[in-house]
Length: 103
Image (cartoon, helix red, strand yellow):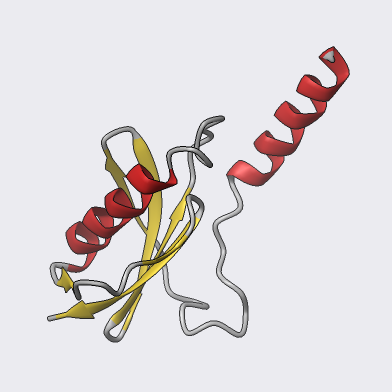
């Protein structure tokens, strides 16, 4: 059991700093804006009228808290872009969220 917890902790630390978009993504090469909302930290990238938020902090309960984290990502996108998130456009999970923006 200790080994499993240790392995999980090491893997989480290794992945926690990984917030780069795919090289084929519209967000590739876009510098991130770091935003924190209610204890969740995000790297937000904006490309045109699309935004992407990658949660960068470690949270063991993130899977069960996805319903809380996705709306937080929308707030982070609005803060980083100065635009509103189009209602109903938030999509993703507790780690990677994308949305359309209305500017």
